[in-house]
Length: 63
Image (cartoon, rainbow, N blue to C red; front, side):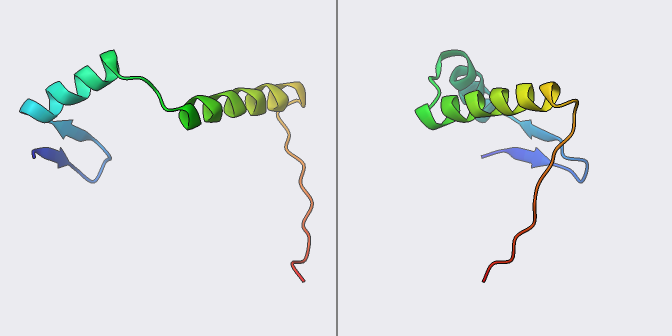
């Protein structure tokens, strides 16, 4: 396997790994959990926009 990375976060796939990744992106089907995660993320983003970009949370003791 030929995966190269550096300190700046870049990852380079070579040869067969690059071809496999390309095919996976083009023809692969997402898992149900991934689709549901994206839906939750979209809802959170919309909620954040509707709230003026603010997040409110309360701290609670765990006892």
